[in-house]
Length: 124
Image (cartoon, rainbow, N blue to C red; front, side, top):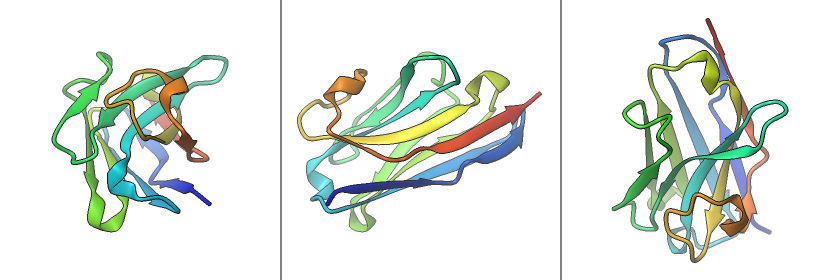
């Protein structure tokens, strides 16, 4: 079956950096566009970033533009989220997701598969 497994979360001070990874299995990774979403306690799951199948095009939420970078390496079935200049408001559980058809989609409903999430906590 399809599995997406995130790692790399943790506790970091404001201004610090983290790199999240998501390893996919059970699917042909290069056929899927990938995205990162996040969900803070009591809030909706929000779009963070997306990358197309080839990695040639990316999209970002306004709140993370210039600070976060999404990338992928199809040879190892992995998508990354480099997070720099972290702020306390970036604290959330971060999820990676895969969609077969919706390139760069901001909508969680467009994604077919989800990971279990990794916690990111940014202290002030």
